[in-house]
Image 1: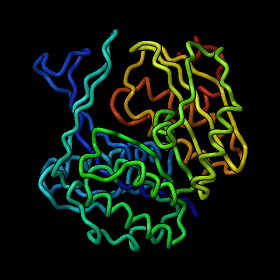
Image 2: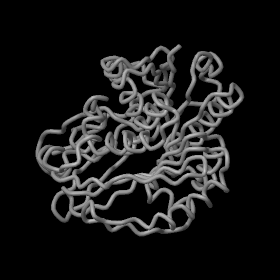
Image 3: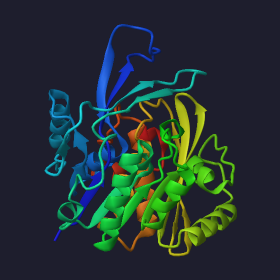
Image 4: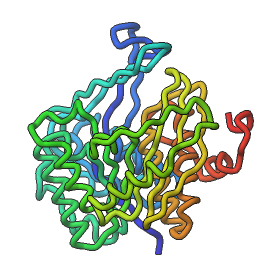
Length: 345
């Protein structure tokens, strides 16, 4: 029997201007669908996995269009709930030269924002599922959405499902008064597989570890990272796979990227990619998350493969416009096998 994944969160409509224009410039907005948990679902479906995305959408043409977009990628949507008044959106201004990127959320009072506990029948939704995935964003949007998230986590835990979590700390979302460290820490207590970037781990632990790679020749202090992960695991002992994405923004168009995996007491590392000519950096963490879920499902005893596969998937996402990572398994494996930058890019 194949593994079934269920992801839970908010799908958003993303607006940005063309050609690196600032938001006040130009006359045309370009629209893409995105949202962390929807991005994970699309990636898993692209890998051929069976996946359901659960959310709440407005019963409007915009809500139905979002559902149709998910169906285009073979993401299951049978448990989507209709209600509320509007689809959440966000505005993305691309980085250029010395100017950083900018994200502006417009999610207040969206259909998902007003999702409440007991609106979804989680026992029914999860009855034939194997893995449940959510992220810190699902608990950051509103008190109602946080309560609905923990209702889902409680049910998945009681039904003995594998639970995965992306820390996904977004400081601009925490507006309703909850303590993000305490709330995210509660989510990690449920989790078997966790992804976060280095900045998010630093936020959760109050500890900073340098990463200043300018190219693939940089050497990480693995002893320092191992000590850090040992402390993290001692704090949240249920999780047996801690994946960390580590990025250095050399310039707006060139980044270095690597990853570490702490699993069952082992500290694993892999190569560093130099990524020039970045097309779109949004959704890279979601590409990491989907790839490790797929890799662990495909080859659960090969943790080094899972790490390298996740990093290659995330590196490729930088070459794809929009939030969704549409890299195939064949493309990811091809990148893993290539050692020459000119062959990769």
